[in-house]
Length: 342
Image (cartoon, rainbow, N blue to C red):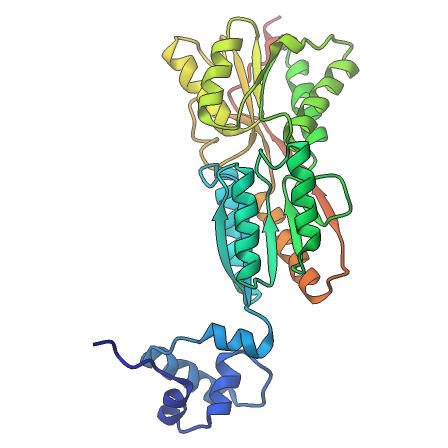
């Protein structure tokens, strides 16, 4: 037989205070109750195993204190780390979160947006799947988001428009990395991109081309391999590029990891035979052999700012702000300075 559920009345009786006092304290509402009594109420509630009735609270306040999060790929360390920070930060604001992983599928984006809307979340953090970034699907997603009454922020991936968003400056990041490689004596540079309907891939590649232009070099489109931001894409890209280039710029660290794996399996030495650069600076990048030169995304700062903007939008639905962050070039041992050997 199940135990009877502990109620506010039970907590109030155990503390010798009114039910109103218990409700005010446990629901974090403004009150004039002494700190001593607050501590007593919280302590007794924990001891008795009191569980708040969020459904009843949301009916009374028209708020669920819940944020929906839709991300495209939890196996991607960038998104996993971002979600970790986001959930911690939202908790500081008094919000729980519902996490949905779309697996880079458009239909899952639609399903989860509707699911979270039906759950009456107070806000939505949304990173579009690769399929949703396709022009036709993108327009439909944009339309559905506009029809919702839920405040939302786009994270990392976005479409043109005035929607609030938080993202890294991919163009400048691509430029900086390729300019660094060129200045280290690399002119035959291969590229392993992500899907070319994503802002990150487009921006990083355009930045790379600008670096070639500014250094009076001709960009070779045949040295581009289009991947999917996963380890297998790194392996496949390495197979395509290794015999043709002196360095490879993988557009994320997961693909760079795939390059390292393929190179080792096929007796290529990094960086002596081919240099390698990545993007993101995920937790493993400094531990690889060789350690990976990469562009570090300020994941923690981006994630915290993302939460701050969403809270502002919840408090004021007319509030709009978009913020671009700079990535930082992290120089490690995977890039050989060929100019030193001349």
